[in-house]
Structure formats: structure tokens, C-alpha cells
Length: 450
Image (cartoon, rainbow, N blue to C red; front, side, top):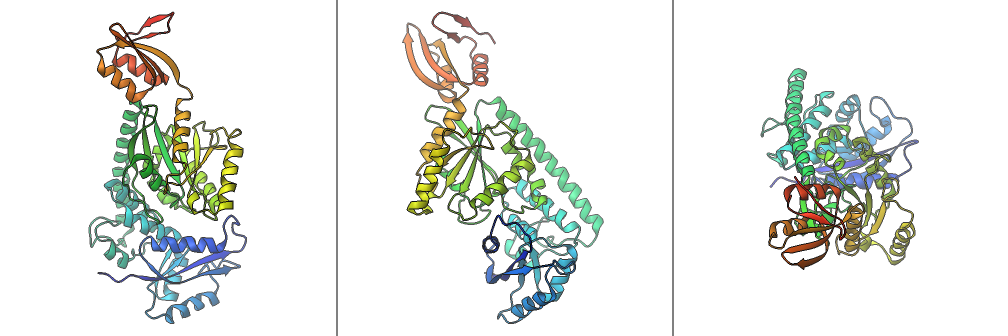
């Protein structure tokens, strides 16, 4: 068993930085990121930075102070995590000054993704993001983590994890990975086209990392996708079907969590995966309403969605699932429920004014209301049709029960009248598959042909 790697975490508090989150909350999140790859954080602190230094970001006194902290800790920590962006020059100078491996925020998130990606597609995406990040640096990957990670790493098999010093070889690898990911993208495009031909609507879960998406996914689908109190517990997208109370079948998609400062390399590399969100009929934004930075996290998620092409101009329905109400005190719970109730009549279900539901994915409280809201949104544009099929046609009846809302069934002679609610898309599909069925509006009878 490999000993746990010890680390120091620092958050550089830049003068004039964003006030959306406190520096302490940012430091806490960085510690959580370190815990996501099983690092032992022995020291953590906020470092004020009045004037960023081009050579080291931090002032000389602070650099020496951290060096003394490293030297005075037994055993000496092997790693310093800087919760911010470092230039290649700053990165190199700090490693020399501290005689320790340094990871900035981007590199740390890349390490987590490299550790967590399970599918071949996920590993390709992480490989590309990591190589793109390292191209301007040409520094070696942290070999201690690579030994822990074993086979799930950045550049293929064990012993081949370290970046070549030759820039051309690096560029060649990037070209090959991009080619492989283009194949992945084409495959996903075909899969999405196939789902479009299928009558099942898609509902995508998005949200800040550790907001509870996978727990909610498991609750809704009765499945067992990995759900942990850990940042980036889910990387590879998962899809399951669920049957609504009306009989409509829905495809539910769980996606990778977002985070503030999500490396642009990862957004680009995971675009093929995240584009599932663009194809969704409904987006459910899962928020950790118990988190002190819940509003800032919401803004970060919307920023990533905008980068993907989901903006206020998009008329796609959106629901905000205000999760983890089981962690709120009595007054806080009442405030959340009051806010949901107050907005119930004014919210339009759009990105700018999403419908809201307060719930706990952990206990199940409020999940029924979420499902009811999804069903209401999906059926809002449904038409009521009176469909006649032969009473002996079990296939047509089963097809409708799986894909439409059946309000009533009436047997008359050798025929079966079904009072249904279904979308125009499903109507067209049904009459194409079952051309002998026809619509009866009591007065007008219209036969449909293929």
C-alpha cells in the first residue's frame, strides 16, 4: 500500500478579486479538491497578494515563509497546491524555490480527472486536456500520483506517463488524440440522431460538482451510479430510462459536475460529452442549497452552459432542483420553501427564470414534486387524441402505453378507443408504425396512411 501523499494548500487572495465567494470558502474548496485524489493536507492558508509578481506570483517574503513551513514539517510535504492559475515561469520558479512539486488549480483538476476517468472516451478526453495544458510547460507529470493511479493515467500505459521533452512528439500525440475524439464525436452524433428518432424525451442533470446530481439520478432511476460526498465523483456520463406516472418513458442523463475556474482545456475536451446537454428536452440544474456559496455556484454553472451554447435566448425548459434541504435548519428550510412558493407563479421555466423545486435527493423529500413538474413540462404541448385500434392489436396498445399518456380505454365491438395525450412527434411515429390505426374525434374520422 502506497503512503498517502502530504500536501500544503494555499489560496492566493488577489487584491480586487471576485467578491462572489469568500477566500475561506475558496480555500475549503481547494482542500476538497485535494481530498478527491486522497491527498493528506497538512497545512492550508489564505495568502494575501497585493501585487502579483511575474516571476513567482507571491511576494518574496511569502515564498520564503512557505519554504520555512515545508522545511519545518516532519515529514516534509512533497506537494504545494496553489489554488489559482500559474504561468509556466511562475510554476518553474516556485518549484525551485520550495524544492517541492507544485500544482496550480488547473493541474490539480486535471489530476483528478485523470484519476477518475473510467471509460476509454473519458481517458481520451483527459489525455488531450492534459497534453494541451503541458504543451506550453513541457514539465514532467507528477510521478508519485501516477504510481498511485496505476493504469488510469494521461499518456497510455504504465511507464509512458511522463511528457516527452520533444515538442514535436507532444504535438503528434495531440493530433492523434484529436483524431480519436473526432471519431467519438461522430459516434455520439449518430447516437443522438438515433435517440431523436426514438420517441423518448431526454432530461439532463447539470450542476456544480458535489451538488448531489448522482444521488438524485440514483433516486430517480433506482440505480447505483457512484455517488459520494466528493468533488468530481462522476466524470463519465450515464443514461437510464425512467417511466413517469402517466406512462411516458424518459431518458435521464447524469453529467460531469462543473466548478469555478473549470480549465478551458477540459471544457473543450469534454465538449462531445457535454453536448448531451444541448440535445436535452429539459435541463435540471441541481443546486446544493445548503452551501454558503450556492448563488456563486449557480453563476458558475450558467457560465459553463453559456460556453456550451445554452443561453437566455434558448427556449429550452429548465428546472432548478434546490437540493440538500435535509441539511438546513428550520428557519432556512422555511425560507427556501417560501422562495419556491413565491416564484411559482412568476417563473416561466426558462434559463433566466427556471421553475424551482425544493428537495432532498438523500431522503427523497420533494422528489415527487420534481417528477410531477418534469411531466407537466413534457406534456404541456401534448394534444388529446382519440385513437382507434383493433382490440386484438396488443402491439399498438403497448406502444402507446409506453410512449403516451393514456387517459381512458373504451372497448367497442372489435375496436379499442384510447383517449391519449401525446406530442406531435410521437403522433407521427405511431401512425407510421401502425398505419391501420386511425383518429376518431367522435364526429370526424380520419384514416392515416404510412
